[in-house]
Image (tube, rainbow, N blue to C red; front, side, top):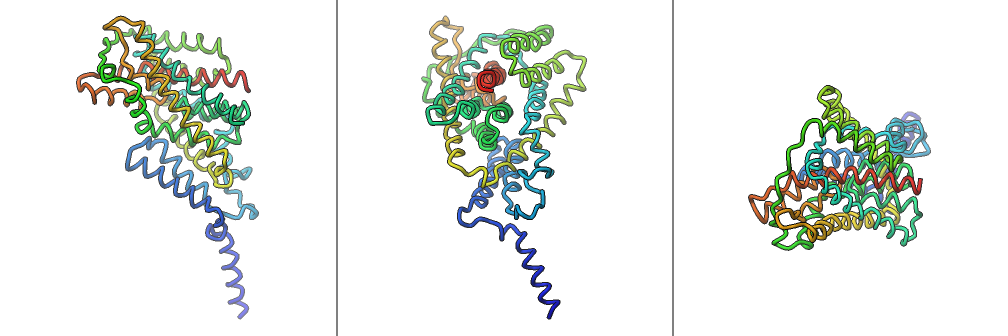
Length: 388
């Protein structure tokens, strides 16, 4: 009889450790977040929405929302000091991962389209208006200046930049900001086409642009050096991101560091993307994530993204007023001013081919697209300089 009682007590003790015993059925937060994690994985696999991002984040959401007794001192949760997940999350909290990702982005990015047509940098710059518009709206809604700055950067459609800035300005909101930024990056094919169609005419969508001129190897080598000096001497606070971006690009273009460039754009960026996506997903524990603030962040992030897309398209339309016939810019590439490389440029291409099957806009759209990468990092530097 004593043996049976002992086994029953042990089973009760074991039950107390299970997720079923520790779930908060009153609010169902863990269940809701688990459903969201499964949705992310579904969109990545079935719809091919940024699988390299959504699968690590989605699975991280599942891991982060497994209920367990915090008082047991198991040291397995992301928010438990000294746990493995907490240590890995340090790369997010301390802002280590984003510069390493920018190194890889630089090593895989071809800036030829921007070098060949420098005026396209203005389109990339115009799209950053969404960041500052969302910043002002967030201020009006009662967020602190530092929180508003971190929320506004979502409009740049640049997950690493959003994580870097929020880790400096609003670490408590970083989980919601990171998930919002990566979610909207993945949903570019859903968000952007209706805005582009609404703001352009049929005639504008059929504009053919002149083929970009040839770019020499010397120009490609000079660009990252000149780009670094022109941006970071003005905005030194953007150095961690811009410095690594241009460094990675120099590794690619100089021709004598192929192994380093291949490592930066291959194994390194893949490893960091896995760690960043997974730990960001784990940070969305229901008790920390499901708040009124999080809902506000998602709404403001969507608004910021819409404004950024519209700003790029409308700026091209305005710019065309001053350009002669034959040199006008197709406003469908205005959406590419957000820094989601190369997905935003592909949307420009797909929209252009829809209205004219022989009008290829991809190379033209890559100009504002890579300019958007630089622009979002500069915008982050500006916000960090004023608010940090």
